[in-house]
Image (cartoon, rainbow, N blue to C red; front, side):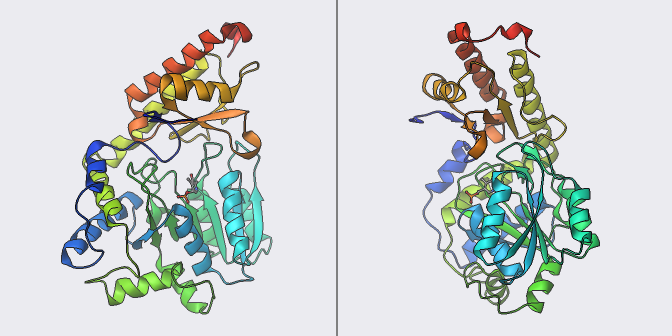
Length: 380
Ligand SMILES: *Cc1c(COP(=O)(O)O)cnc(C)c1O
């Protein structure tokens, strides 16, 4: 498959605006010194607003997985128990990361396409689980389910267990007030809802999380991915060189351009925009006979997972959209491969232009293959 100039309607990376891209081509800043600090600090301040937090927040070079690794490895020692919410590919990924540190994983699961309820987490915690952290994905990108993180965090707080949230695909796209909901470590990336290129992972850390780390020194989980290393540099070298290592400074300059735009636009308006796009996409698809994989009640406004219909080859539809219509959407992950496709409507992909191009492409495909399809007018 070639992507050419296709419009990205996948759940990351996302298309970015020209002025954000242009920042990538500016002369390179070193990752220290006064000029750099002005840029870094402004980016961090905007991110704290997006996160709704007054906690420490760092920009860790790497993908979201780097910061998720750091969260698990910093908060927990080999042999510790962690309760992982698992209802899809990315929840399973968190469990794999935890096992790679020698952590003992306790699971709370739900069938694919359904959220894990806070009551299930509460039951797991009250059954004497003796866990030292709860880890949960906010938007489970494999199924479009938005897990009820507010209730899950409240349950964890009642048991005084810190909560790690993978908000890689949701932060900046839907409300996720970190302090109000009592989230201890929260991770995202620029290249999904923050509408800029990949390369750093913003991560916030609460005082409760720092306290747990201080009580449990010598975790033996390395230096770069140890959040305490990041704290040490932010504290000791904060006025000159706020991070332990070199940063992709152009990536952060681009992120800053996007963050300024997001703050100017207003977070609420952005959230509304995504809701509206989700409605257009789902209404349009239902009109053509498709059923959504995820019930609307749990579905994130950022991403729609769509069931294939009998006689329709989901992968052929994706190929057509990409090659003939210049729209890239995602397929199903793992066991959902060939059974669903996923269309993201975040940032630019939430615009009427993108949504219309996508829906027109699907309609054209159905007409093209119409003979092989059951009568779609009977469909729901
Ligand atoms: C995309 C995604 C990831 C992976 O992020 P990387 O930056 O590739 O490490 C993790 N979790 C969720 C929920 C995602 O959507």
